Image 1 (tube, rainbow over the protein chains, first blue to last red):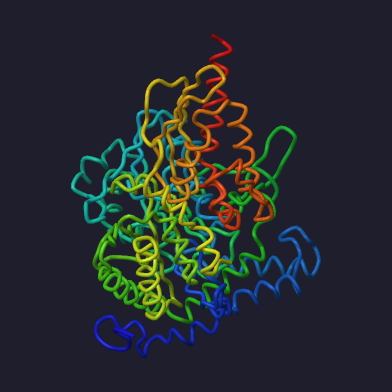
Image 2 (cartoon, each protein chain N blue to C red):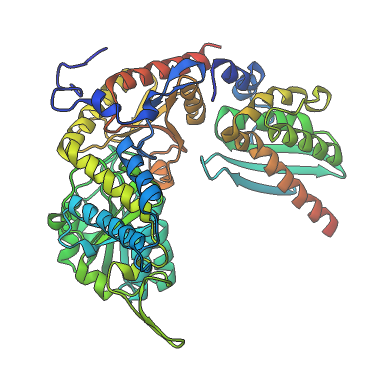
Length: 425
Length: 153
């Protein structure tokens, strides 16, 4: 096994025991059709869940289940406490100054839609104003801003992407101006893997009085995040990509800002009082959480951030960096394979998209699947980023805290098999 | 869910041949209708034109971007419907669609589907059924539009 335990790409060093980590994820022990062990390289899509998270959710449903904040019985109190404890844990995990700054949504898409909607309703973005995004955004950080600017008569502008796959900041000062009201940017690209210098963009945006929304969907799972020093006004992310359950996302926002914004959805739990004529609204975060919230999911997400904290996010990030470096090196040994995105593991996250000469990504993914290797093929909800590089789709391998060098080797072997299959028949 | 033999069943020699050498590829004049269909989950795209001559499918021309399954399927579509009465072409379409959506339990009729029977293995792969049907659905749409235009004229 090349590189194992030696050299700069030693992902499996003493500080981080990936084999011990893998024991917490029973799904990784599966073998698939044809007796191939599962090689799961689709964690940027969704991560697997450790036993600890699943058991926390199970315990909640089996022992403490009730609705929150409105059940005047003991189970109701337990469920409410468990739900709010999840919020406290998430707030601690991202360094939020106040736990009330953590708003639970159903996913990161909803979190981004929430911000875009209420900033329009609040009149923060009006006709003639500008909103700035980038060409490397996930559709979730494009479409809500298109809807907002169409609704308000504002203009949508965007940063380009360099040939290397980096954010093009050459026109930072002409793109982000006094007309800019919001800059919404991904921290880590889900397609290119690029880690963006968000601090620079935040500094410029605040210079001109614009708000900054950070899409942290790929960042929060793999790099240490401290919103108290980041400087952003909002950060959106999702539970299921960070070993937590599906069905829960997070919008973190500065408290004073959240407190100044109107509600998103109307319903139970988000009100202060309701008459037939009008309503007044609860303080954040409940103002933005209409209806029964994701209760068991909050418990699960709390267990997920406990799990990540025990591993240490510095260690998770170092492992991600090492495994990505190893994969970039191994993949680029394959003739006819082109990495779309930064080719060196510098300011780079653990998602690698690539094309293979003469084999369409669907066919690549299909052949890899027949060898137990799970990857994603298509546009990864980032069509403009693909268009930027003149490709209709790519194959994407993405890594996480349980990925081993042996799995990267299996990927490379399966790619060679694919080339032979389509070239040699 | 897929072992090597199922993958071999998916990528029949006939499919790979059509993929490498597409029949009737490219956009041509004349045509009565042109449609553009996409597979939103993966981004496969086809622009397809239909030229009718009375009740006969005189030409189906197309420009397609996508995987081997979607490309080969467009090629086979061209083989099977060009020169046929519209009713026969639609019957073939129905047979192909039934095969694709039959979860592997539909026995294909070679007299009707010819090279199209090679797609029987696709039915085992739910994620790929849309690939195989992309150009066929585009053909159905374009032909229906062309027929409407004819009736209006």
